[in-house]
Length: 264
Image (cartoon, rainbow, N blue to C red):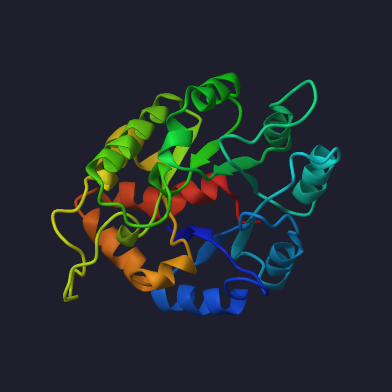
């Protein structure tokens, strides 16, 4: 099973161009990646270009402005152009009579939803009500159900864990990322493990809740470069899950992402 990075950002105007990502992928032995549109950007033309230039290496998860009257038509066009998913927040709602119209459109178009937010948004009753109302929509909770920076507050770690209760819905998946998202860097920094121990048991709790077929690793490139770095985000996460079976690790580090966000 190829290693697949389920969460990367590329752009010529913010972050880094796709060639820089490809260098990191090749260096780390990552064969394919899912391009996730950054928040605040609904021009998805660069990601479409990346798919055309590098066939077989990328899938594209797009963003549309759900408040626009042509949002559903735009999403349909993007799906025809090769998008594999759409990025929404737990609070995204459509104007008009059906606030879940954009979510239902994703289901009709066969697009999975990569969902970004914090643990408060993911544990809100309004979000679990949405998930329950949309059993045909595959929803992937990003960043272990929280923001992508280390957080040593025990109450916040526990709040993240409460969000794992969304695993009761079979259409909900979760992304795990590098340890630098939830572990504190040891000072002074020493190898081979640069984080303070003990580390929060978030990876193990995610595994217990969702299982390997509903978990996917993603680097969060290039923000990960300001934490432990691309290769370490893969290497150290793999090491923490080394006690799982080879089959389970194949799903977590490749199979699940390819199932949810097909690389065409």
